[in-house]
Image (cartoon, rainbow, N blue to C red):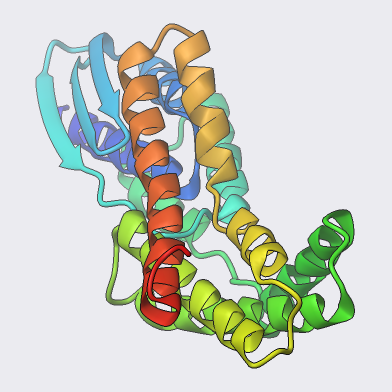
Length: 256
């Protein structure tokens, strides 16, 4: 029936959108959507995916044809726990092919993943900062300011994620906070230099998983998505440098 195939269509598109938002590679999304459609005996499946747009058309086993599109509005944070749940759901659906009308509820259940406690996320973020400070041979004074910046960026991120959905702007604001604090403590004589603080805190802003996904897209033949993702990553990285530059220009009157 057409109603059943519409349930499959909606589920496949929403599953693909959710996978992208959680940090999945586009090739993984394409493979998942095609497998879901194949498990329900869909024919002539045509799926087009960018990290910001999805389009799917298919034909049911009784000849009914449906199509739909979705715009993907990305967030600021990748959720690997939710991604794992979605992967398990896709495997379960492909193996068991539950009734199509149950797919929406199953997806909502998979998305309902408990978030890590705020204190735990902050604690592990501070632990990673301590490790990076050791790698760059930073002093205890450097470490204290790095940890202060880690807390400030983390708390501001909780507030900004409800106001900003653009990672470029988020990186500018975060880098400006880090740079301003580092230069302030350098000017009052607490630090011997602010470079170590800026380097360590900036490394935590660099988008690692999206960078891997972009190169994977390029190497797997999905050049359009790879190039778009790579250009976005370059802009996000430039935004980090722009935030630091703004703090230097504001507090030091230039680069000299």
